Image (cartoon, rainbow, N blue to C red; front, side, top):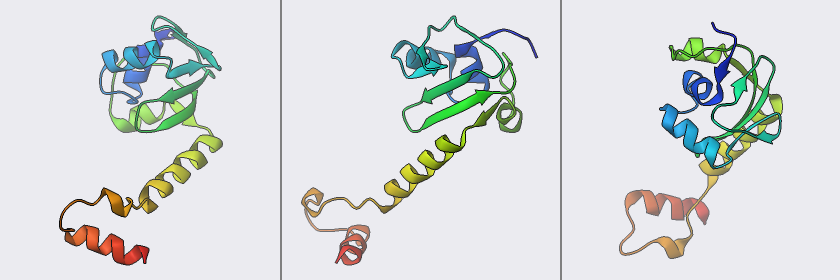
Length: 124
C-alpha cells in the first residue's frame, strides 16, 4: 500500500464508485468532503481522515484506515475504511423508511396490478 493517494482513486479503490470518473464528478459537485471541507480530485488521502460521501444512493461517513490506489475485492476494499456509528444508524433508518414507503393512491394509473392491490390492502 502506498502512503499518498488521490481522493478520486481512493474512492474508486474502496468501491464507493464504479469508476474514477464517477468519483471525480461527485467530488466536483461537492458530494465528497474530507474533514468537513470540500476538496478537489487531486487532494491526497491520509490515514484517519474523516470522509463524507454521497454517492447518489447512500450517504456515508467513514474514517480512513488504509490507503490503496489499486481496486481489489470487496473484502480488501472494506479494510480501507471504518464507517462511523452515526453513519450506520442513519443509513439503516433511511433503508427502513424506503422499505415502508407506500406510493400515494393518486400515483396509480389504470387498473392496479397485484402488487398495487396488496399495497392498497396493507394501507387500509
